[in-house]
Image (cartoon, rainbow, N blue to C red; front, side, top):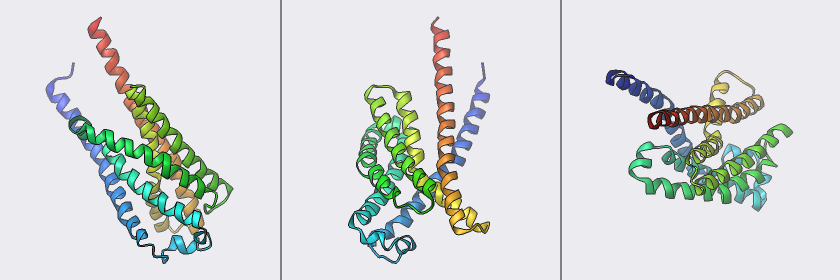
Length: 230
């Protein structure tokens, strides 16, 4: 059995690696929100809007765009509260209510508008198909997360919401990869496509890694308790 010094060292290492992961996540999430807010001035002189000027003549597309970026911005901030152990332990009401709002925003606003906009996405058929997959996967994982907590299956709830959050975070990771490839001199269209694919597939793999780690830890704890009680 590990002594107190070993446990302290293990905890310190765990907190260190958690900080390495979460500090950039929080920073780039807040940066995305900051960069999204100017769009709500409804000024048309943004490169994204100028590239899609014809689409923005369609009221449905224009409304979907503003609803989608609002939903994405909110979900990224709301999700940060869902993975805080302090909030979960000390301010559980915040976790519950922000979680409920997150689910509603994804199901009613974020995923449907994302699915609609995917039909007009830049790139080839495969990029549009990927955007469709993202919207449907985001919707599906969020619904499964809601169903599992209603069934009081906390482990399944955590796992499905990690997957849901991984899709919300593609808005952040895509921009990070895009900047990296831009500085390496990648062609604009290639940069867009490769950043998109790495962001989606990378986020899914990272989510599954976290789920594997959490599930393994849960099973080890469960087996340890069985041994003690037997």
